[in-house]
Image 1 (cartoon, rainbow, N blue to C red):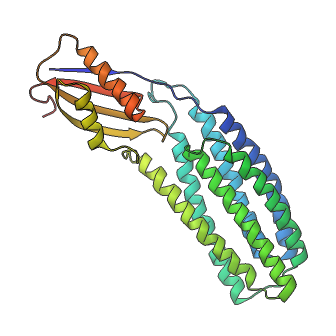
Image 2: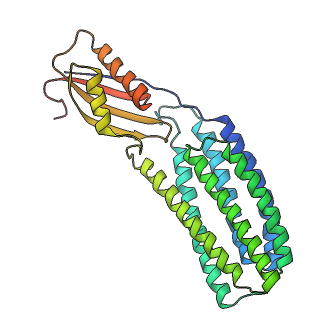
Image 3: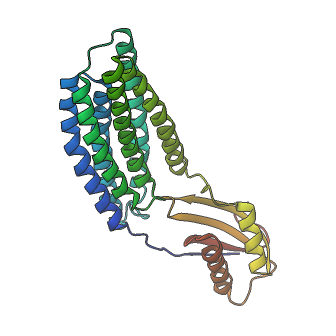
Length: 298
């Protein structure tokens, strides 16, 4: 015999985080135009690479802002969990875009190492310095948002990549002014690409884990089983545990618990189990099935 119960807990989108993404989007899009012009005029790959990155950042931030808007929609008959998962899709796409940027930067760097072009270092230094200021502002705007949100994390990684690109362009410009050594421009671009590769891969792994319904990284299912059994002495076993998350902030769990005999108030048992899940593991959405004897699924 089994008893199942389900309760839904809404998880609204942080309006402050959404506003911060929109501010960063305006800053990035505006300066991207300036950096493209500066990169063309100066002939700097470091600037053009950063401008190309800022182009994808503009799209990434626009996608992040759109994801916040979509995920705030209420659940309907076709999306019973709502649209929270769209944020994770946006983070995954942003991670892939970072890898594409890396490939483009590396290709251009090889071409420029083989045939180093002349670079107008003074223009490059001026534009890169302005870009650094804009990127620092955008970083601090996003830094105040919810850092556990993968959509925000994806946006932050893109802005950090821009910031590193500006630093690389400044260093390259100073070296060229002092020594005239042109290869420093593509070499520093490769260094930035390596850093972006690491960040992009990490973002893809985390978002893919959620999209594949993986168990949240912080959740130990063995520990959860022990605490549930300890919370209700009548429970003899806990099995068929499935845990996943719509987002890192929205964990979901289903499980079967076995009792010696059906209690007079089955709901009280379920209520105790759900309270334990909330208090010990911050899981607000769970489905609990009570069983006496053989499991119905077996």
